[in-house]
Image (cartoon, rainbow, N blue to C red; front, top):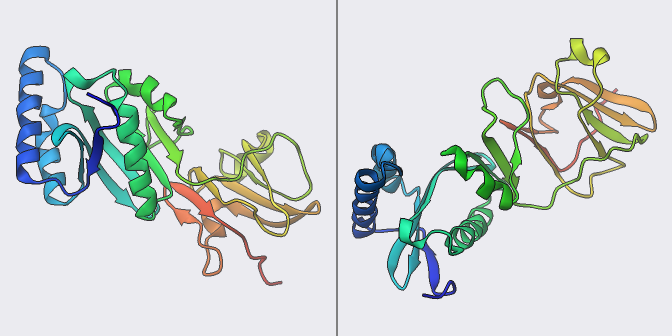
Length: 239
């Protein structure tokens, strides 16, 4: 069986779902692992058109359960049928689904590594660990689907700086992230964060605006796509 003999199906039918159920039951009974314990969620995702399958020679050998919010697609479950694992199908499946998400208008993917052993796979797919946020665990990861501005270590005069603390704690800490920002961003910024963290915009060493991330959100500057801060540009506040 060739890796090239595959395609994704974004509109699986009931027989695909039944095939998935059969292998999950078998995996649960014989190996005591897999996602049959999440069958209600899988079935509901199918009903909500949030189930994508991987087909090889018209056979269903993998599936993804997903959800979404604003710019973010959340992968809740990804599984490849046991006998097709470690053959490259997981990588190919993820890449095809990523392209589908991007074409649907999503800019970033978020997921929770379950089981924990899947962490290595997602790192190999280019995922980064979420910053320390109260409501996300250390196994929460994300990956942007578009080219974004890179964090710089160099202290420059035109910049956006983000602290991973609230404003009253900023003087005791250095900024955690810094992006170069001249008259406009060459590339957009996508960053998971708490919207109570401190953000500062400096232009020619003059502070243009500072405060909690959520206070940068306005009619002119919509940046709140929780849990991601996202923007392509910023408009200076009127004096």
